[in-house]
Image (cartoon, rainbow, N blue to C red; front, side, top):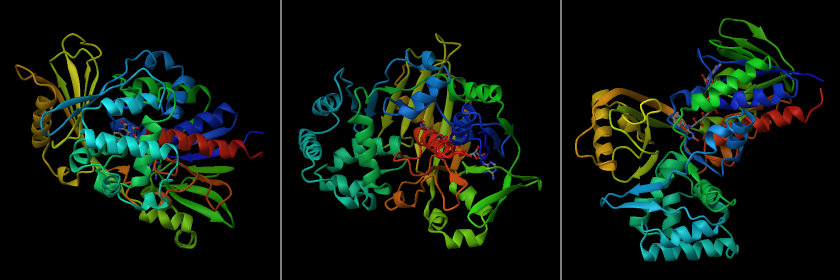
Length: 436
Ligand SMILES: Cc1cc2nc3c(=O)[nH]c(=O)nc-3n(C[C@H](O)[C@H](O)[C@H](O)COP(=O)(O)OP(=O)(O)OC[C@H]3O[C@@H](n4cnc5c(N)ncnc54)[C@H](O)[C@@H]3O)c2cc1C
């Protein structure tokens, strides 16, 4: 029987849940404070998709966008080290984990000694002898990599760059457990798990626009410019949501797909203090991101992703301009987990981005900049520091008709696109598993 569901937050987590629920005939309303859907994705550069992101690929397929993204070429993973060395991680056409093991053996970014330590660790992990330590979630990734024999050069030149890309912060700021699990999922499982694709089409083209069109067709009510201000509870249930304009809305189910620091102010204080589930949200924090987008009059043949060591920005994506393929390109310079960059002026950030771009893509003459965009986000991604993992909530809250979704919840992934989509699906599954 159809049930009514009120979803707070029109980011990708909320929209994924809305799609699954509407597809099963439920009556869904999405409350979004902004004047457009998509949340953080609206600021995002082309996403870095791995084969291991199965929930993302499945959503893309459901939306009929498979034909747009599948034929895209694999994007090589390239490192530019502070010595100026440029090294590619080889994508070998072998089943995983062989491709990664052989790729690691041949990878010039690590010294022979580091490769040997890593391979012997991987072999032991495989055989569970000794099993991975239980306290990895409480340990710092940098310290743990040192303990398995990775040199300072390897940690700076390779692992730190991967940590920034996959978890959004440097090795000394992230938990060893989440880093290890993410590396394993991305590079050591699944037949083609290491394949990496950076679609040059904006997320809007192949994800948000088709998703919105599908939700419209299914009759999902999308309330934009509507801010949830308060949640009301009675006994073990949520009874209503009050919006900033005092409108009150009721439903059978309530699903929060808000960031943690936006959810807690909606809860009565007694709920936050009484339940550990909500109390621990205050221990979660978010890390910053600075993004410079440069539209250049230089052509680019293919999409490139370069991880930078010792530069201001941590990675650079360059792709051909969709319309002016032969004449223009777009470059995205991304810095994560660097609060000191937030107060920098636009001019300075652009200057630094051009400097890093020149190192990543040396050219005989500097390209002409056609257009610039600078985005500074103080709270961009969940900080995955040691201990954060146990504060990430599961979808079911102590209130029987209230669920919590969002990239930052406990999905086993860092707070990325895959995590957001997975959390939306899992929350919808809880509702779908309950008869009215
Ligand atoms: C610049 C940037 C680049 C990124 N790049 C990548 C990438 O390459 N690959 C990747 O995997 N991930 C990337 N991410 C992470 C990814 O975008 C996010 O993990 C994901 O979009 C989060 O989705 P969400 O639905 O959980 O949350 P959000 O997108 O934060 O959605 C929450 C929504 O709730 C709304 N809201 C807040 N308060 C209220 C309220 N009181 N009432 C109503 N609505 C409210 C917000 O407006 C927002 O729309 C990037 C993030 C950023 C910021």
